[in-house]
Image (tube, rainbow, N blue to C red; front, top):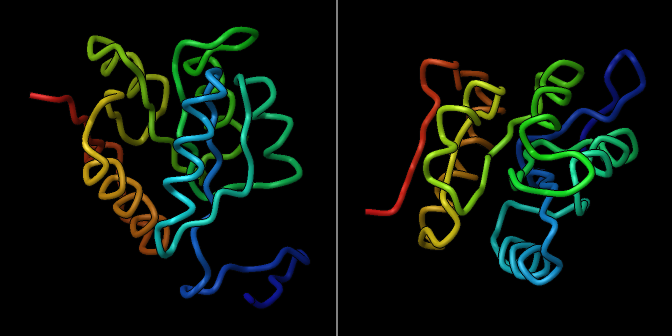
Length: 152
């Protein structure tokens, strides 16, 4: 467990797993992502949401290190949610995850730190989450280093 910071919040220890939030409107896809990520060492899914508005409400209770954000969702889409989250919680890393490869520029412009197309390999997904988790610890994932990965 991490120590407390001066503001009373628990600081993360480098050995603590990265807290992940999965934001996806398809319950089947959300469950599959959550199950798969939970099996990986170094990650813990701390919250799940079915749309951007729900994700923003959950951040207040369960602030994640990284969010896997679907872009096409009802109520509040992933682009609007990403803009809002980055405005109020800029330290949270956001991985945009969508079926639409042509949304990469828009997702990164909205503030996403990385972009993947659904259907990418499990290896690519975990590698990207690991890169975001590592950059959060080291503080070196600059906007110029934003990465997009689309299937070949």
